Amino acid sequence: MITGKAEKLILALLEHGSHEKAAAALGWSASTVWRWLQKPEFKEQYREARVDAYSRGMARLQNAVNPAGTTILRIMVDSTARSGDRLKAAVAVLNLGPQAFLMDDMIRRLKLLEDAKDD
Image (cartoon, rainbow, N blue to C red):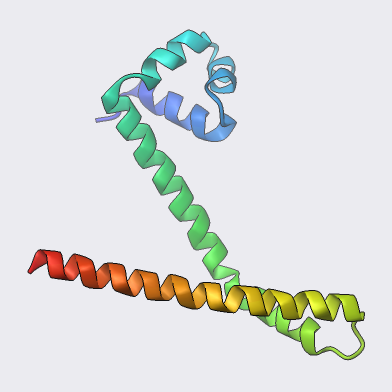
């Protein structure tokens, strides 16, 4: 269970990015924050909060993937766009497409391993 102080510290760490800045924002000493960060239970709570914050950020970016892809493709095929911009768009397609495929393949393989482990 996260206590009020732990929750305040986690929020400050997420917002400010370093324990020194979080301590200053809370009016705490940096050594107090450091001591909190040494507690295994708090470290796990903070890790879970970071994972959750990262997941929410990635979900927001996923919502922008289709419009971003459309924009890149429009620039790539726009004969009135500068050639440098068209080239950058084409390179982005060539670089990002295979990465997306590889990521999907890795996720599929990981799921197969996890399913096999559960059997």
